[in-house]
Amino acid sequence: MVKHFAEVKQVIVTATIDKKDEITKPLLGVNVKAIITTFDLLLSFGNYQTLNDVLNEPETIIKDLLAEAWGEPEQLAADTSKPTPYPIDAWEGLLKNVIVAVARYAQVPLAMAGQCVLGAIAHIGQQFVNAPHGDRHNPASLILVTEGESGSGKTETMNLTHLKIDEYEKKQYESYLTDLATWETDKASLTGKERQTFLDSTPKPYNPETVFKDATIETILDKYVNLEIINASWATDDAAQFFNGHSMTSKTAGNALTSFTDLYSGGVVNRSRSQKNAFANPRTKAFNARLTLMLMAQRIILEPALSDPLLNGQGFLARALIACPEDLRGYRTWNDPKRKDDKAYNNPDLIAYWSRCESLLNPSPANLPIAPNGEPERIKIQWADSKAKQVFDDHKQAIENRQRKGGVFATLKAYASRMAENASRIASLIAFFDERTTITVDDVKRAYLLVEYSTAERLRYLDATPQGEQNDSEKLSSWLVDKAKGKNPLILNRTYVYNGAPKPMRKNNKILQNELDNLESMGHIKQADEGKRKVIYINPKLITV
Image (cartoon, one colour):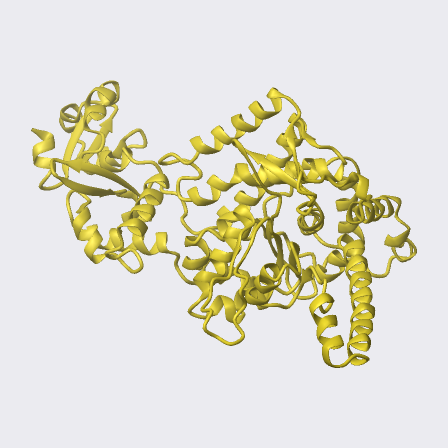
């Protein structure tokens, strides 16, 4: 009877403290206000107390049973002010010491130093090893995205972590210029048939550059299909060119992203274009190619990128390892005499790291794996034992479970689904740097710490919006509360929500359902089926929040 009348308006019930649970528990979630008193109301009235007197008694309890059935709604806006602590213990030995040293000398967060070290060993390692995943082996390439403001130390960090890579690139380029000059001289000395024979038998030297800072995806793809490169990195401390360049802002941005994801996933390059053009390249594909992206940029560049539907929808960002560390500007030390005398280039850990990088960049031919056809072949990193593989699978399963409805990764499934693959790649690169060909249990656990860190950082930026603006979840919650006000109970038909919700949720079932699931996990709503219709209950605590 009480529930029936509560559908029309709020009902007030009374009970003494000893009968509180007996009266209130069956009515939780119903539009009922319960007045709990020490003595029976009739007894109080017999003692000449008014209702107001009873309500003002310190022992009297008043409960809104509709609101009691709901928990406190959680805050929807992402708090981007507190960076996730960087798991420095995910590293050990020389690489851990190097990250700490780079962070100290460049006066940057550990996360920035760690990302740059990962970028360096990925650039080198992707050329020589493949990472195990399931029943196959994948490229060991990585996509690394790091936030760093202008003047925060990005350039100095890269100078330290990529020192030997830069020196190697310089030597290769100088050798290329010498070969090119010789080729041009030889060509100029010949005429007629001799020149043609020379051109047919002696190809013009090509630029061996493999680390790009300012390029277009088309330029890099052409180098792959022309067999000028097979291993490369786009490594820059100013990724504005990448995110805001022509390739990523034109109508063909989707094609550019597909090229990146294809390279990441399978090492395939596809440049199928019209062959009618007089300058058309007959080569259109490259296989076993590798590309690592190490992109560092200011927040003004990254914030819109991390919320861009295309970058997220096509899976590019889902493959990325993201870090948005604290800004140390204002807290750095420049006038300490001891610091001035302590030079990075004298640090034994950095010297050992640079020596290892140099030897890995220039391996002895005897140490290079060769395929039966005589071509270089990448080493397939293996699991050290069945326990290492089982620990890897256990972590992968734990991530899978967190993608369930209401789970931590329920609204981040694309990212979560890539965590295990990235962990395998990181573990393989760590083994490669240590000159091993197998992944241990310890490698697996430490690699998962790094992907967990990255995903936690991505969760911080999931609702990245310009300051003062609402994210999509906030917009939808506010709209639901506004439309439910005055209704009894606080309920809306899902079809009504589908047709009237704010953009981009309006009439987009996929986006709407993702946001509804997020709101439910945050305690703002409950979704239910009532017969053939789907309804949404709104947390009554939001009406007064």
